[in-house]
Image 1 (cartoon, rainbow, N blue to C red):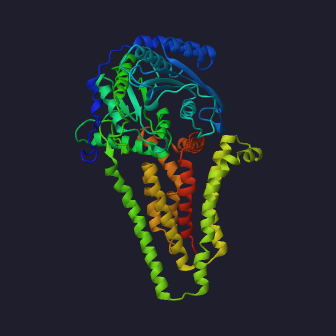
Image 2 (tube, helix red, strand yellow):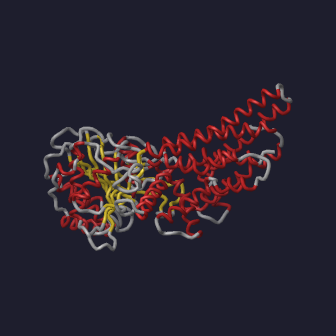
Length: 572
């Protein structure tokens, strides 16, 4: 990217220079031995070995606790083949010898079904044993092993903070440490590494403080680790076409991932609780230069030692940014004006309609009684039906799955997705059909309806810009042009095609295709359709399991606004 738009990253905290601590650990052999023991007990018990983990952590000198939890999903999760989930989280606390238990740091290893992440558990235990022998810790250290990926992490966070946001069923929380200042989630797939990929996107597009990412990058450089973002290597320095193209691909992947609202890893659930967090994924590819677990262990040790020296939460660097690479960032001051220009288009069109309505009232004096009343009364049915269609799209698919499975030969997950598509398509015909039956309303009727639609869309995009900028920007790019151009009369076919192509559902399908192109793994229409159906199901599950905002915002916000514009186009 251009240096003016994407300056180099830098550490804002003076106490976080990577040269101010020295890492003395060599955890590779110990981590591999513990990983093999964990894998053997895991295969023997058919799940996470709670007793072995608790005993090992206790031998390492930690204060050990476990937390059982259970969660019944609203409908089966076909991606992970689960419906009723039961599991146990195990965590050990290393109390700070130099301070009271008021603050803490956390290392998380998520365990899912299969033999994945055994090396990460071994490295966690080896690092816990090493840290137990040091006396410089001023913050508690929490070493957490969760079961069932994000569900276990969600259960642990709710139990630790004493809240229940997602109807999670869990036992009493046995012990706590201090307020968690930062967290790292670790995922490894092999005994050796060629690179470490970092995930930053959190739930609903939240991002950690940029200083935490800069700290990880500085320690990777210090220990000779190759770090990547979105699976992409850093682009070559200097102005070059391939470098700019790679930066744009990485930036596009981050925008799409942030707009999707799904967490990029277990760390994404911590951001809701004001805990700065990252997910680190060890990659073993075909590159020749490889690293052992000892190099990654020294990186984790150095990061925890630097975070241990902080006297306050990370706050001096950016919370709102985009990353074309790990070495450069785009601040909110550079990309926020783009959405501001889109909102300006809506404001100018709304002002134009308001002035035309005002002039028509002044010029006509006292308009005919039927026209005046019709212009107001005929707004009620399209508005109510558009809002009602959005509410039905949000409520009925999950709540009506039992009825669908009784009358159609489909499973519950398929019934939810098919009901979602059916209600979406049916809602496109309701406002138009209702207005054809009522007829009338006049010129001022559609102008007033469009004015309300523009104001509603502007309000929605403004709120989204504060919650999830990437989602607000993508919706603005797709919805603002048809919103500004739509009007009844004349040749309606071009505007109708434009509205159909920019409907939120089709925009999601196009986003799936674009993501595969940016990943340099293009998908055909058949594969893209399957991924689109999977994205619909996962979006509903994210809303019920973790409280994600994408599904309600699209169903109750973007879809009714689009239906109002659709009704304006076919106004009689």
